[in-house]
Amino acid sequence: MLQFFAKYKFFGIVLFVLSAIIISIIYSILKPKRTLPVYEPEMVSTELVDSTVQYIRKYHKIADFKLINQNGEEITQENYKDKIYVADFFFTTCQTICPIMTDHMKDIQERLRDDNQVLLLSHSVTPTIDSVARLKKYAIEKGVDDAKWNLVTGDKRQIYDLARKSYLAAKSNGDGGPYDMVHTENFVLVDKKKRIRGFYDGTNPEDIDKLIEDIEVLKKEDK
Image 1 (cartoon, rainbow, N blue to C red):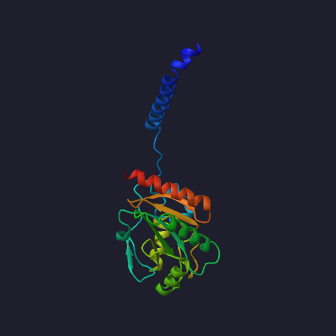
Image 2: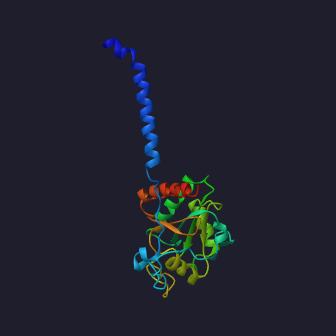
Image 3: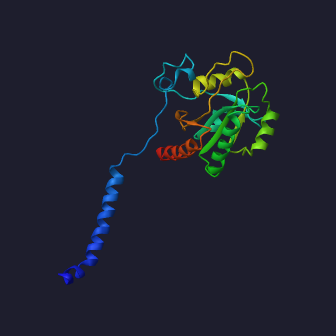
């Protein structure tokens, strides 16, 4: 009996390995690919969404914009055409969540520095204070890569409309003074079709890891 098993030992090992490979291939074929939701305004808390778009159930996209970055250059949707990007809202004099968010955005920049499919976009919520010169100083201090990450200022009304009507990421409509926007800590993931595909807590390192993972999911979706 022992001689029989010894004689067919190699055959048994080969059969076992082949079976494992076949099972693995079948599992990978049958396992559904992970996809990200497409966020519509009606899926988001109403406190973050302007009343004019709360009813939208499909086809929501980031509106066109024309803003100015830290180098005095005009930034529009064309700069983000066919790109995945991460957007947020901040202001340079913020001493609470903004420094943490900026550090985490810097982390994303470094982790994806060589990935030309992904860009970053940070909007100042105090555009009358955050001039081009102030943004440039802030960018240098924080280690912003100009080729990867735009810090933008511009028309206040346009920025606040973008926050509540496009990115769904602010708790007020900006009708008061220069500090009236209650922006959130959200990082917003936008796909190449200008659709929102995820919200992440920009102050939470675990959410940053999840954001990086979800970017990879989006990249596979485009293949």
